[in-house]
Image 1 (cartoon, rainbow, N blue to C red):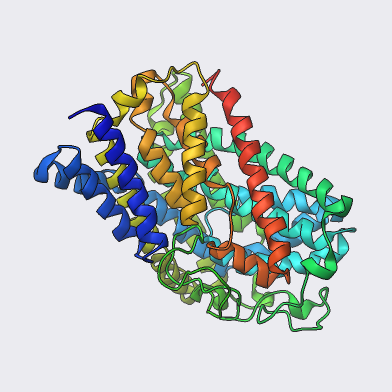
Image 2 (image 1 turned 135 degrees about the vertical axis):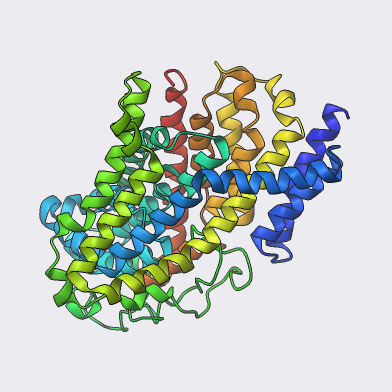
Length: 496
């Protein structure tokens, strides 16, 4: 089969996935499998080869990252039920002061809080950001909204254990420790620079409160309520407003049934209304809440550093294995929460965690199916002839493909995985580090978060912004972060 036919059929398969999701509102999981089957049959893999690629790709990626995703989500559910976010925000405000709060929020949300399911994290943190906004000075509301949007979306794709970062590492075969270290190198300067750029724009007349803000509706802050009142600290269960969270993509990009563009009523995730009372939360030291998770991530990073240095030690090698490290983090978090709040809270958190992780695991698996089918079709050798590892072209193409897919589909995770799968076969052909492709795909998938995203509508309703205002803080802010990220990633290709 000619190279042209393979390239054309790959493009048709990816386009078909987009059309099925956007035009026909077909579930992303089913759409990705259809695209993989079409490509396998038209690329000459035959019936057996196509089925082997689809099922094998699904199984292979889940074998690599399935437990990691499950452990990460379960740990995040424990932290949510223990009131970790509210406690951490208070500590940040004390440590950083009002002026530094947008930057501290963006960095913290994009790093330390990425084990918490994104919709839950947003529904809990947005009202807290709204309370803090009047205290940080001029344009406090849009600055906090921008910091939240940038931190949430960047963390998903760059920071382990964010679901996008773990999925990208699985699709491309990137060691999780390497993804953790380089993701941290990229995400921190990206969110700081992007938040700084947006702060300058917002302070120089780009924000019009009369047109860009509105009274929140069903967002846990009653119309006319004092934004700094303790009564507005958290939303009521099931009252997120704006957009339904439903069962869309794990990053909050709504693309399947119930996730069409435009605002509508809907309930927030079940976990939102199940946290303990403020009195019980204050009994638990904040360091103990995050201690097990941070230790687990440090073990993963230590294992990666020692491996790169050629140092081997059986104990460190065992503890530094991502599955073991995150398992220890989960066990430690469970023990702390169980001792402080009882068995009932642990059981509720586990139930919520399993419910949240199911859709993430299936979506990640079918993303692996499409990536494996593309690889088996021989696209890597074809595209490899056009690039060399010493040029920026492959990384820029990954960024562009992911950006176009995200504009069409509206899901950060789906577009990142699909883009990475298209060019994953190129990496071994031209000697490009797979981790760079993972990071570039994540960066591109951040471009133009818009009205098809559940995150967009939650930010709009929970922070009392108009649609016009949310386009500025969320769509423009995260797009700036997308461009900043690829500019940070490109120099890494010279040293990685």
